[in-house]
Image (tube, rainbow, N blue to C red; front, top):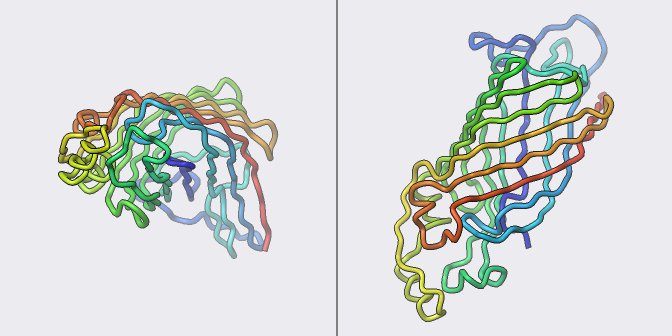
Amino acid sequence: MLRFALAAFALTVSTAAATAQDLGSPVFSSQSQGSALGFTLRGGVSTAPEYFGSDDQEAAPVLGGQLNYLRLGGFTFGDPDPLFQPRGLSFAGSFRYIGDRDDDDSPELAGLEDVDASLELGGGLRYATENFSAFGDIRYGVIGHEAFVAEAGADVILRPTDRFSLRAGPRVLFGDSDYASTYFGVTAAEAATSGVAGTGFSEFDASGGLLSAGVEFGAAYRINDTWGIDATINFDKLQNDAADSPITRDDEQISASIGITRRFTLGF
């Protein structure tokens, strides 16, 4: 059963040479080429802690995608060039799925209430140059935890060739008190039940704020104009109440993924 972040997905619409004053403005084209949609799908496998704070790893499928361009009438968003790299400011939608947490799968959590799977939806801003990128996202749990989270990061990018890139940079994750309580808090009733179950969690009121900080390394290679491969590895250290929670067995969290990308173009 999948209990951790199963997928991260971003839909990005970026204009050519977008600026802070021209964010999201369409590029006008007088060419009558009909309408078209270009997007990339990603599928692969990942390994990550079984739950936030776990010291055991679990393998899971990972899915994702990106909107590359949209041509509708005389307006074009993005760029149909397979090697196009967005520059300047752009807006991106974002979602994250977090699987359920169940003591049937993790006996060390006996006495704690199960946590349902969550789906977070939101968006944020991206800024990119040839050798640098940064992002900031805000998401809300529309299913599951019903709390706000914010994520930010930046990367230094190396491009040995026009088809191969390497990147590395910091990542931080913030969550409100509802989010922290869901994944790191222990109620009085849970403390009493866990004592009977033998796991003995003490009551803990988890507060929101900075919950993890770390670094991500990534590599991507475009095999051709249609297919590609990419990989990431993350080293995160839980912070503040996330690290102090009695649920947390290891505050150093490692996750990694590798996937195949496939570019699609649809005319309509």
